[in-house]
Length: 93
Image (cartoon, rainbow, N blue to C red):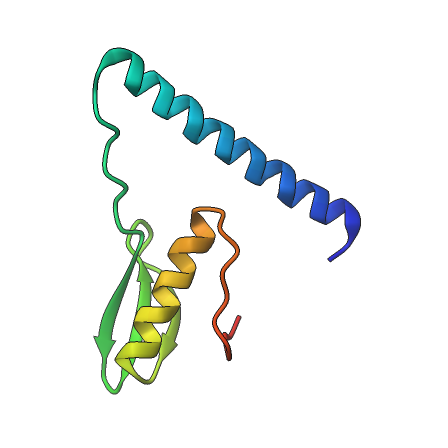
């Protein structure tokens, strides 16, 4: 990855982390529990394939031929949305 693009990605990840910390601190100050993070990606059977659908938009983000691969890919997408770098061997983009 180009260095300037890498810096930008790291900067956004740092801002996300700071936002999460600030949100947790706010909820701790008012004595409330943090809201539960909703699931972003859902695996849906479409014919012989399993589609990974983003729940907020309804768009298909990918598909896999086995349920296990579809679940693993959905978990990778969830982790990436949280800013965690995660990859499976044979991961398709």
